[in-house]
Length: 222
Image 1 (cartoon, rainbow, N blue to C red):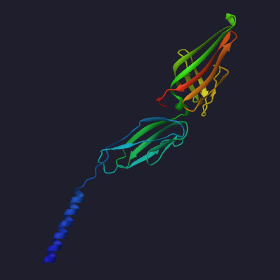
Image 2 (image 1 turned 180 degrees about the vertical axis):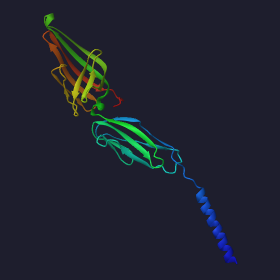
Image 3 (image 1 turned 90 degrees about the horizontal axis):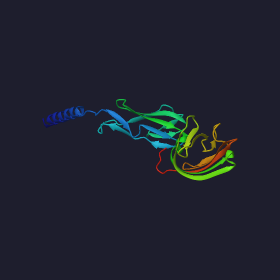
């Protein structure tokens, strides 16, 4: 009799346990966000995107990562983005539960490392034939700006209040002129934060020479 009662109690406990398990409901995912909506990188840069899955108590927070163009930038299973080559791509984060999506637009451009505000020291020398060989010289200190130019390999450099130029720049920071602008030209970037330029523009009536040294302002974003 005691044995029979034991099995009855055991069966009741098992039924109760199963019912309790059925009452435990999974918390579905309702959304996902990323810590960046857009990024500009230079080749070989890396940065980690952080995905926040809502709600906080979601049962399955697994995120799947994809790049729309891996030739421009790749992303691994942890959300680390690696810039590969110039171009544009979209990094996509998808929740395993519910297929909720968040995206980050990524632009890879080697020129972006030099974009920003610059402190320029500009030595100008102007020679005017019409003024009997008169030569004027001065030095200008100017908070200028370097920005992306119109063509895929151009930068626009504004080095005085009234002077700016578009120049071709290679991935290693070497400049070349764009006719009919300043010519001859020499100069290059030294790393991301220094620039040297020699510009000359002239004709039969005279000419003007610019010798430009610049240091990028600290804290300028790419």
